[in-house]
Image 1 (cartoon, rainbow, N blue to C red):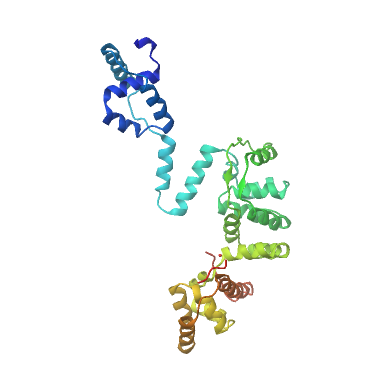
Image 2: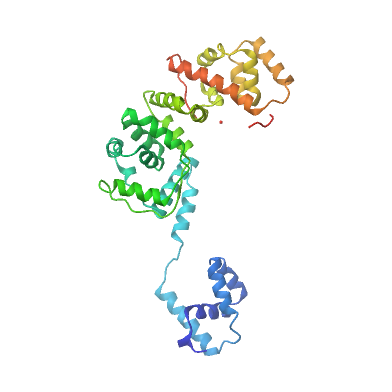
Length: 334
């Protein structure tokens, strides 16, 4: 064994053996599984370390310490952990998504820096599926402004296509980049980008103004009633009614009979129940409480259906301008 013929891996193995088991175990905590396998396999081939080799390995180690003095870190891992610890789950998640997008793929990042109207002008000549894929990769508020700026005849088609997206493949990203390359320089990505199209379109519609979201949902409903219903469930739920003022809630309750309300309240939170009860007569509230106590198991799907029928009443009253609501969803037994 001569120092001149030792590979870097050999020198690491010699150094760790000389440092001892405890020190080596701590060092292993900082190595990847593959690195540990490589080092331990090399260790296994060593049965004797001459004193001169030991001294030269240590001397090389001290020289390397001086040459590379400073702090060695796994920068990407550190950044991810720091972002995960950022206050606010939504902000932390958004920043982490942006960081991952920036490190794993540069695709479409330029769009995020462009004015919505400019992006809309760029995309309006593209196929609606391409536009949907682009918007699904953008921050919700930015995507909502872009969708609002698109020609009215495109909006519904694009919104519907966003709701159907689950992930974007590298090949699709490449085609998008090719289509937009003349206007903005985008760098090809290699990894699939996970996209929850349903959550994306719900967020986008919730951020649209001038009742455009209602127009888009009405048009989607004509082609795919089930999809429109699913989007509505996520946009505004029965529990969101708790945020309404008393006058608005009373207006809704006048349109609902007690039996229907009792079923809808089966899975409601205590806060929701008390809000409902405080906006109706004491006698009616007591009757519903008694009916709830006496009610046996019912299917969750039946409860949700009734809750959605009440939500539809609320949305209809909003469309008529009688109240303002804000947005914030099986057959098991409950």
